[in-house]
Amino acid sequence: MLDTPPAPAWLTRPTDVNALDPALWPDSMAREPDGDVAVDGVTVASLLEQHGSPLWVLDKGTVVAQARRIRDALSDAFAPLGVRTQINYASKALLTAELLRWLVAEGLNVDVSTGGELGLALAAGIPGERLELHGNNKSDAELDAAISSGVGLVIIDSAEEVDRVAAVAARHRVRQRVLLRVVTGVSAHTHEFLRTAGFDQKFGVPETDLPSAVQRLRAAEEAGTLEFVGLHSHIGSQIFDTAGFSDAIDVLCGVLAEISPSRGLPLLNLGGGFGISYTPEDDPTPIETIMTGFADALARASRAHGIPVPSVSLEPGRFIVGRAGITLYEVGAIKDVPVDETGVTRRRYVAVDGGMSDNPRPELYQAQYSAVLASRTSDAPPVLCRVVGKHCETGDIVVHDCYLPEDVRRGDILAVAATGAYTFALSSNYNMVSRPAVVAVAHGQSSVLIRAETLDDLVARDAGVHGPAQA
Image (cartoon, rainbow, N blue to C red; front, top):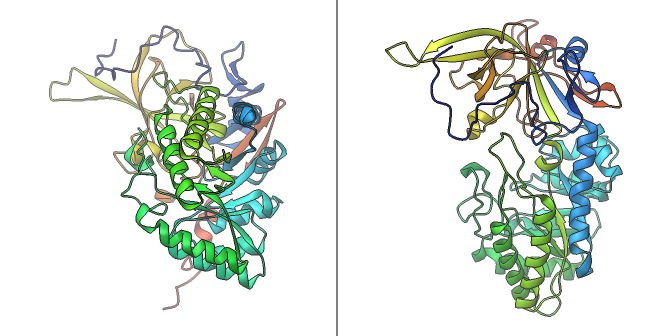
């Protein structure tokens, strides 16, 4: 038996190394009688044979189920308060044309944060009024494209942006609906780079600038260019508890009471950031409990500050697509490497044919993932492994720590859980590695959402490939 380093405290040695934890994997994922893992009846071996390796796989059924679950949880929680609710899918998590069509068909709107995201959503046929535009540094071109397309909401991120949005709206002779993103000072209990509402960060209007921003908004309303409909807040991502959200709701209601004491404002966007399970250690609060907590907190805060209860919208992304996605890799080199000068304790490195170019989150955020042997079952005992990529970087780690069968070998297929969000979206061509395809599985069939890149795609942009570049 290999003498391995101690496993992290949260990682439990599995009693069945072939088991699939339903909290981590798509709803339809299961093992076939021959041991091959299948998603909605399509085996991983057949997926790689058809689409190549590595491969991002998205289970449509799980996406739709998660969208319905959070949509209905929000609606049910706020029904007793008699206010409208709306889910806006945060497309930065994963953006494909067909995915947006699935979600809009379920009654969701779409949140975009750049001109590129806006352009793809419009190209997918999503009506402008079903979109909202974010961004801390929107260009003139992005504002023009959004407002000319009839975008439903623009989330204003700074006091000076009020005048810029108003000017574009005036040029197009429209009255643009806007929200004002407010810095609440609430810090989510998550990774530093995933906190987005603390005082010292780039998003939103700080308290000191609120009077100027509101004054400008009221002037634009009088001029007929803007319609100021509410406030926006986003405290962070991958959040498991409700305390931060409750604190933010109280702050926002206080701001509403201060800037519009007589009538309040009709809409409060509370952002997203709802956590999912990446490993068995993760235990997110059920979304139904979170939504009930939101409704209770907003009812209390509205009463305390003497304002009408506003309508509520949310911007989930990871919650909808995270668990629905997996990444498939083919195993290559396997090394048992000494971790110190004694050479007794050794770490097993299992290299795969992708890496940080298709999932940089382990390097960026020290994110933890889970992996299983997906092309067969094994009776071999579990051994602690580190799954690494093919890139020329020591930090090119796909899964920091996981248990795989001791007989894992070259040619096996590994599946990594919960990669539907922020993997394709953050992917790159580092080391001139082409990005894999994104495929959807539904009703026993797979279909390409985004085709795989080829070497021709990568070299086509290099102006010097077909001759000397012109100086």
